[in-house]
Image (cartoon, rainbow, N blue to C red; front, side, top):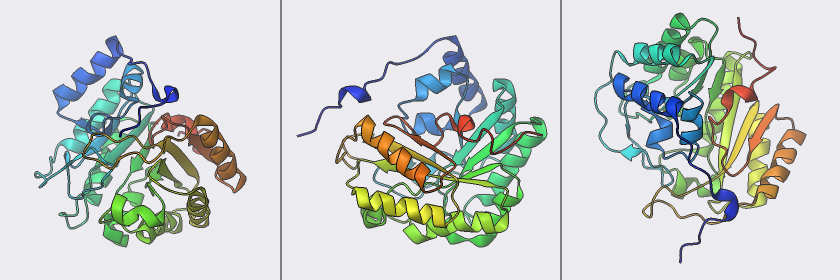
Length: 288
């Protein structure tokens, strides 16, 4: 029997003029956002504040993670104009902090790394002073692909671990725990100035000791920022929620993470990897 959501997971829907303006802009430009594709519970709040997380490389993913609402299908060809479209959308929204993510594209030789790099450079060229965070796939462990993204100069590189090693085969088929961890380590080897970030979903069946183990692994890899949020099944065909984690447990986990050296931690039921992302890097990155 499916458990009903507890009171702390009930959220008021936010709309309004700014919200509609963001929707209109996205529709006009033909851009995708992870906010919409992943059924993010914060969509209304973020759109109403004039922000969104752009999702590049199309809207079809080559992997089939059991937690994700993004469509798994044969990808369409890349849109060569997408980097400039994202840059223009950032300008129209007046964003001072832009977050760019993507579907996973294992069908591409570089996993889409060069497209990421073009998008970052386009955003920076048309929006001087805007900071850029990229939330990237693992590029199948390719060092060259990662170098392409790091070389484009994003201030923050995010790659989510998502869950504990034991659950990878059932939660993230196609992903490898150590490969994701090594990606974050390599970013720091390539450029120490880049802020690295990762995140976990809780409520998938992980144990408290396993969570602590991931914290330690991330710190050893030099990860600076951490996000912790509640997993919510997008539909009945996705992996079911194993447990609803109470807010006070999120608070305790945040203190634990800060205690072992993370520079900033966002932890709570509605926290997602891009939620209030610009606030997390205050004091860590300075604008030109």
